[in-house]
Length: 96
Image 1 (spheres, rainbow, N blue to C red):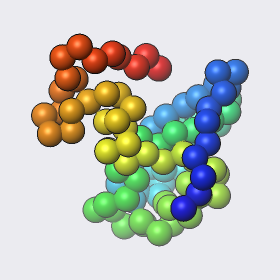
Image 2: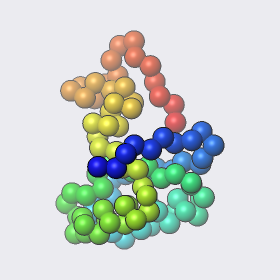
Image 3: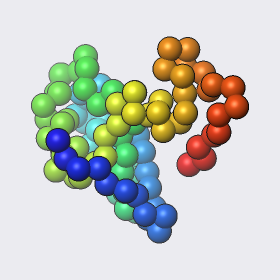
Image 4: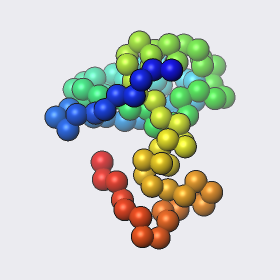
């Protein structure tokens, strides 16, 4: 497992999700973020699943150095209660 990376406040981040092992969609999303000059790219869930190209999508994301988060990691970052998908009372909000 790769060691975690911290994003610098000086970078231009971009994110995408829900490509579901669709290689053309993943390539298109990465191209849009490249044109937008995003220096850090974060995939926020559902990179693989029911689509036809799971291993190719994982290889592409790995080659591009994309930081991939699972739903559990994303929920933790956003301070969500995973059982209800709601923010617990009194918890803060992460602004991106």
